[in-house]
Image 1 (cartoon, rainbow, N blue to C red):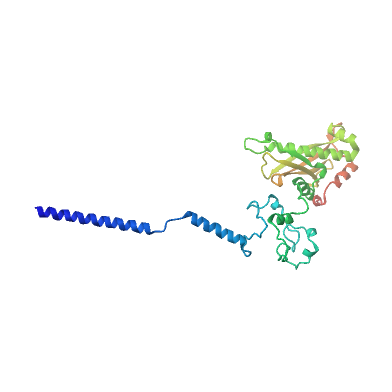
Image 2 (cartoon, one colour):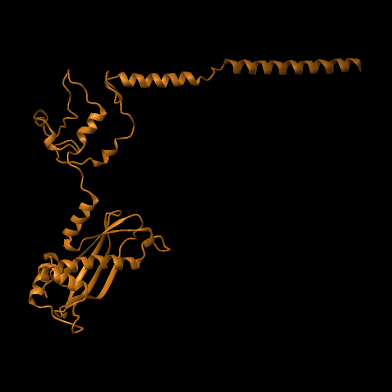
Length: 308
């Protein structure tokens, strides 16, 4: 019995010794590993970047005495870049090139040709300055008017309408009924110009006060192409066209309209309407006369004239 206890104790001591050896071995293996050093890796990355700045063949090379860009983003006016000629740097006007630059072979840009040995390299800011266009870009108002004139619309009808918050409806866009008022403002302005051409300021005053022969709106149809929201400014315009109904008498004529959105940079609404010459003294439609018809005919653009 005593001998069995002694054997059991010896076995326990052997197991404990094995466990200690395993633990010591594990500790020695862990301690043999190279500890992680974040600072060493960071130092290596910074040194590699500094070497790239010093290497002339590197795209990150900064010549001595120069500075890098203040921001990784391009200057705010970089979006104004444009191409003025096939053999000219992007956005660089031809008149800004010196005689030495213009003598460069076709297809090579003065900004990409090899500099002279003693020439001072251009900084990024100087390059952006050279790439800026020499003329200011057209305003949205100018572009809108050019677009309307190309479409044959009468400049006498141009009406600039600012969109206000109250023009919105429950659907968070300008209510459809508002466009009828916008077209009316442009149409009345066009009627004033037409009346001045027919009979001067007196005829203009008479047509606004419903005296003598004037104009009334018979019908209007509107085509909504895109929703308009606040804030925005609209350019409303009209033009006379012959229409597609040859049965219309001399007392009727067609007037089409369009609304150009400065925010959308496109036409968002169009309309077509029929106007009637009306004699307010006799309370009936009438023929305005040959002189008025000729004046009205001259206001029809060539593109809108349909042979009937």
